[in-house]
Image: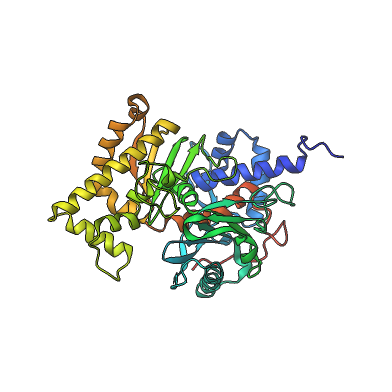
Length: 427
């Protein structure tokens, strides 16, 4: 039996491909000389790996810069047109599906409202698959150009055997999705085999995670969390969640349920939460609960419209203003718990509701966090607004297949592992 701890030449080569591809993606364009300086690899190794990546269509030239006394240096970047990734947000009122190139430029999008059946599992699966077909059609591409589909869902995502863990192709997750199970207590999902249900309708690689965690990955890669090794990305929508990042990686806990911040107890015996418990943070600062506490939202309107009306009313109505002030204190107290528990460098407030109320409440939230948190760790933590907008969950979901592409050095999706026959023309 082969020694599992022994790295082969093939492993080393894939590791070098992955390291250079990832560095180019986040820091490029870069020259070969800069790649050598940053990676510590020899000029020969850089030349070989970069040559392979260019031949595969993953990397392309991006102009040149003058060098000191020598020939201009050719700049390299990851080829945005190498393929596409799809991000899906199974939200509270809709399923949003977006198709991106590798630079995460949107090429097509579809919004599919949830019907009166709400989060009926079969209904949600059908919307995801319909949205996937729609964006591929609208972008005018083939499914073979899609490298993978990431899906953000509410609830706890249990990856299961072989899903989200190293797969069959030399330690690279191929995105089978078969064993993924979702426990969404607030939407009535109990051990739903979501991966298997989606797999029945598509052959594309599937990656599924909690929506707050996909939001967190997006903000850590491209937004307000970038550069922080320790952070908490808070999602405020109809409900409340969080992505806890430790040493640059999401902390998942024993069964991937870490980050259910909305269901920490704010008040013993308090308001009834959607999860069935009393006194949860979500029952006070989630959009659904906030509008219930106000009690004056126009009937028949969306939560987004209701929250807009509440913010407008607070300019003239003392009771609405008092409700928002109380919400800021609750939110600040909840953030203080995060500071005391995790000692993060940064806390980022995101989610569509967080982005709506955050600019108005942020100063009061910061004051409350200071009042409730331990002074020393609080002084080391910044509290900021998210930068990626209300669709950050979808962008984050798209980073799931993109992360697999970078981690693998581009190997798993090529039908021919050495040459991609046709380059995708980015429209």
